[in-house]
Length: 471
Image 1 (cartoon, rainbow, N blue to C red):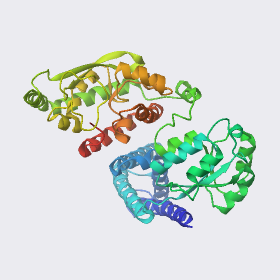
Image 2 (tube, rainbow, N blue to C red):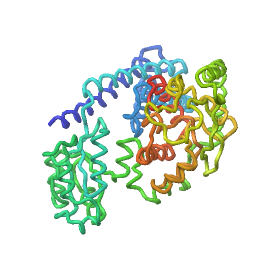
Image 3 (spheres, rainbow, N blue to C red):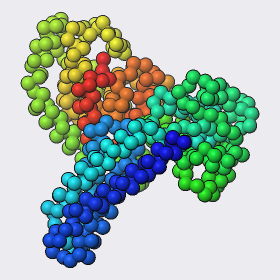
Image 4 (cartoon, rainbow, N blue to C red):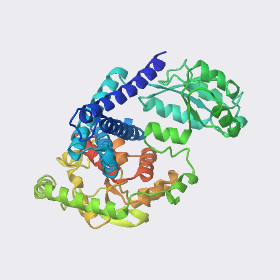
């Protein structure tokens, strides 16, 4: 079975990573004269360094968006793991003199560990070739499962194969699934005889749970049932095999890098007011915004008069700058400033591909994001942050708040010049697109941090160079 083989390759790969991590530690710390202590002291240094760096790498790999990032962004996470390992090792050496390691040695070890991690990642990707390593069983039926499978077909995760589902009803009648999509409809959409890209079979009912876990070599169970939940979790916890169990909303977030807006409820937002929820300091974010806006503004300063001249040459009938009210943090309106890229007299409707309102040369300004440089002023005065949801017009916000559940929650943070939704999804021009985009914005709201902001900034540079997601 291919996925089973891939899972073994992944385990061997992790074992190989552990081997090369300790090998690097041995090369740096074990040779005679590497430290002033004896062999026992050097062996202790090897063990401590190997363990600390390995755990740091494992911690970064647990980041739920890791597989959705570009190679360069993943290398940033790996660099953070190395920096964390070096900091912990240095702290341990300071308080435990018996380790007897020096700052230069820690620096050499950090560089070598980064190289070893890059080699490990390259070999793993070459061996697996993007093939799945986890076999997933969905437990439940109805609209949630159908939507998940349809989305997984459009945007599959490279590490997971959806094997099939167990229904919590035997008949699939409407009264059995509380008005959701019936089992018959799910089978018609997703069984192995259809043209769907996801080969998800209906493998039986909950009575067949243990049989299916064994026969299909399942290692990941995703639960989406409303009834008999305690019994189900009791049976799963008693299973002697090695499985992980997740609820559908959490697994969807893990797989797609966004929050599944259509399956969450108001209780999802409770974690944001939990006493142990600590997003990073608003002072730190504001300081980062000021530094980034100032540095980028100074670097882009020569472009501002050239862009103004370009706009006047191509569309002299209106001002260089475009001002429009947008909705910011807490639902408060502010005036957004951009370089104008459209002819005057537009109605402010969604921008379309090849929009005739855009004058000659305006497309280039949009594709390169030069038109958004004046947004730096909005950041400096505090209307916006560098990273956050893009601000929308008040009339669209009023419409979307009626059509999209929890849309107003995106205003819990300042809008941004760029964001997780921009680098993952790009531009949207419909209510459905806005609902999809909201999932990425809520993901950012949940996971916001200084480092995630930095990763999004790096991804934004890649997006601009690829001219992705603008119109």
